[in-house]
Image (cartoon, rainbow, N blue to C red; front, side):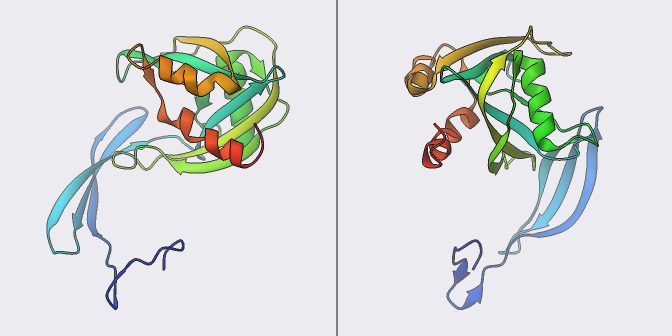
Length: 199
């Protein structure tokens, strides 16, 4: 049994892939590409290219921030990876060794949007693009955030902040189809917040 799932074939335990060796194929300032040589359960051997972030002390933080007027704080973020604007939640890296994940989430929210959070409630942990990277995410809920000043765009950031009533969020995102890309993490956390009775 694994996480409540029965992963067996007949009476023989399920065998996962065996990692034979790992080697760094390329390394930059912020990421590296690692080749993972593996043997599948059928004996077939292969290599998988994995992108790894450097300088992370904890998980990547995502923030579902809600104003006192029940509006979700969103970002239109120009992403160089896809050369387009992406509608997404405020997020950031835990790249400061003495900073907790909640502290990093508060800092990133303030820097990127100008909204300040008094509370960061951890909601759900997940993986992002597990076929490409092993990066882990931690999603926070920040209730009753307040706008306190102009956001500060960092290097390589062009962010436009907007707010959408939470009860109109799904219809708003559907309206964006064909206009801009939408980060799937934005919708992924919504039913969890509803299940927990937070929104």
